[in-house]
Image 1 (tube, rainbow, N blue to C red):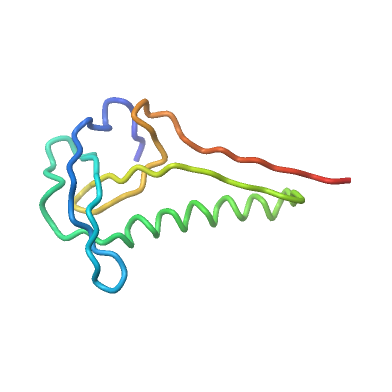
Image 2 (image 1 turned 135 degrees about the horizontal axis):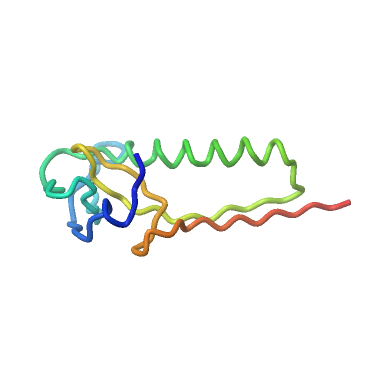
Length: 107
């Protein structure tokens, strides 16, 4: 799905989210479905960590191809609710991707 300025809502709410071992944390989540109430439902943080893992695996695959001597990646993740599930978004309020990559090669 393509998230553009019109699709990302300014509506966010603090919601309870289950993490490992049944612990519940409070997370600020943005509604991505327009009128969807982000406060309804049981949310699993694994929906977010699965997305982070997929992002990290994609970046690692690229690093394996270009083989830098040293690499670092920094990214911010906003948590959203879409179709009753949590999702990780690589966006900021301005909808610009927040991804900083540093690569080093030595001869």
